Every structure is written in C-alpha cells, then in structure tokens.
Image (cartoon, rainbow, N blue to C red):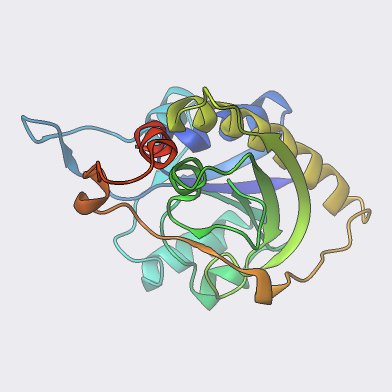
Length: 227
C-alpha cells in the first residue's frame, strides 16, 4: 500500500513511526511550511519533517494544498491512501479525490464531540472524565467525515494536557494501523456522524490563558491542567 502522510506537530510522529514499523510504503510526507520559532525566531523543521528526513522520506511543504504543482506531485506519487494527523488545514476536493481508499484522519476526540483544533486542551479544561481517538474518512467539512474506528481513554484527575497528548498520540498510532488493515481488507463499514451531537474545540486564544479567580476551585484546577 502506497501512503502519503500529512502532519506537522509531535502528535503525528508516533503514527508515522508506526506505519514505517509495519512496513507500509510511505511514498511522501506533507507538512506545513517551516516557520520561525522561539525567542531567536529561527526557522527549524517541525517534528514530522524532522522524522521524515531522518527516515529518508521525500518531504513536500506547499503554501496552499490546491496549488497545481502540488496536485501534480501528489498524482505522480500514485498513493492508495492519504493519512492526515494534526495537519491544520481542510483538504480541498482535488486532494480528497485522489487516493483509492480515501483520506484517513486520526482525531484526538470521540467524534462528533470536540471537532476542531484543540480537542485535548478543551476536554481537560471542561473537566471531561473521558476522551479518545477517532479514525474517519475525510470529507470537505471540519471533522465531519464518516467514522471508521474509535477507542475510549479515561481522563484521570491528575492528567494534564501534555500527559493526555502523549497517551492519545500512542493510541492513535495503533488505531491507525488497525484501521488501515481492516479498511483495505473490506472489513470496515464507515458510520455517519450524528451531527446533532457535535461540539467544537476552538483554537486557544491569549485570553484563554487568563485564570478567572472568581471561578469555582474545580474550574480553576481544570483550567490550569488544561493549559
């Protein structure tokens, strides 16, 4: 199976390692363009790009996913599936329609709950007692595609966003491998989401860092854990 992997931050790295360890043929890795980071504003590769280069994989960093040259590059790769994890952009129809098995996304929530950019942070901040990982077939919407598999993970009172992030990343990597095996074997029936139950994990803003000391102690505790 020829796979194009799309992801940027550290959350996606365990999944890329899992695909390579299972001897899937990763024919290309797509990440967001390099951006200056830190106090010195140095341009450093993101976690996925660094992993890909260390593994000898070709890396593509288009400014826009609908660039004609990038679409031609994807077509040339002749991929069977595109795996997308924490990439940060909605895929255009020209990309969604390319792979034989579709575009498979790993999302760090139990969809349709916590669609969007910050599902781990928001789950902890909101005091949830469970979360999980979903694999889905992507469509043109924001985390609205048909569900393939889900796995539940309890949230402990001692959990921070960082601790939960790492456990979910590992869980997502294993669920991805299972999903690809079952999907390509014709053993998965995608299930439509119940859109009436959808909630959204909006991106964190500077004002989210402000602690409201007049809030109940439990809310403050969850806020600190979540940030």
